[in-house]
Image 1 (cartoon, rainbow, N blue to C red):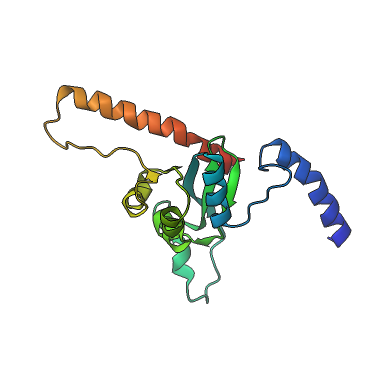
Image 2: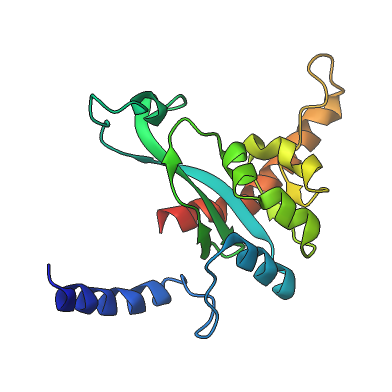
Length: 182
């Protein structure tokens, strides 16, 4: 494919992406995680974070780090990326990919998310249960689903309250899944 064909193809795709909500505004372009956190702080919006696995072909036989691509969760060869969307599900940041054996919370720490949240503006980030340790490290700015307080002999009312809180968190966080799908 020559350069003019690629330019023409991107010229047709960009308006389509803009219609789907992948732009912040015509004059704002966010390139780094720090810029995204700054934007969320300025606008007072909530961010939603999640990790996603992208299935890939198995690396070549002679490659020394071949086993790193096997995702323990899905038992597939994959690369993982961390995605951050706003509360409408618009994609704000997608990290570079890493081999599939990397956990989402580890990837967030590697990208410096904890430091950005502690030193940056007051921002609320919704995350799934895989990011539970990040909330304490970031001064409570990462909100995860509630833990089960009782494992045995819970009061009768507790299960209903816990389930209600868990569903409320999940319904706020589902937009990141829509952003990943888009």
